[in-house]
Length: 245
Image (cartoon, rainbow, N blue to C red; front, side, top):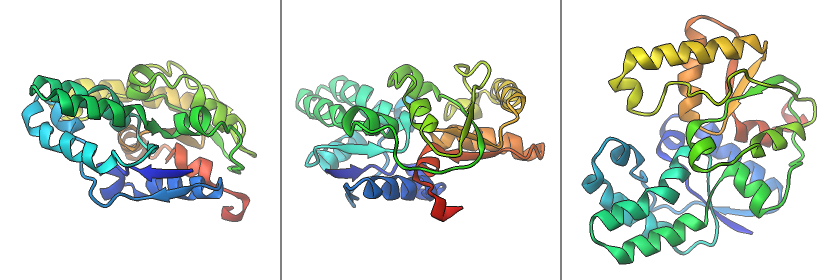
């Protein structure tokens, strides 16, 4: 299958390992991954902060860039959530029904990584090897907007050498929420404190998730207390093999 990679801003600028791992994993499974060079920010940050008019050109560009591809994948539940649930809304708010229809079409073919693997490619065992004790944080957008359910955990349970331990109060937000963490810093820090405490309760070596943004928030907190727990994107774990050990 030919799959277009929507890399996302955060992966492009700060966490490229997640995007590279997505490519390695899909190519190992026998698929062709292409990178549409015209892609930019999807506009999620603008939309969530109330700047829909400023997001409109980004929505238009995203639709034009990814319209030629049958399948699009992103290593980010929040960005996929924006493409699938916000782009058409932004277009309709601007009175552009044609763009809204095209945005819905692109959104229907855009998947978060675990969705692509299980729902589209029909695979749960991706041939990964990762000999560590791991806990999984289900990010808000993947859990509530995309409703990926237990797909990430199903993939992790098939990783050889990996011990998956349940995260207490897993469905509670980590406190990041994009600009929420800046506008409501004290509340965000309190939520982060709860999430860190639950991660430490698992005695996991690694905390994983499908969004680098949440991992950045959780990982930053854990590093400041020298907790000894690493944050690793789900794609990096699924891409790992015995050759990497």
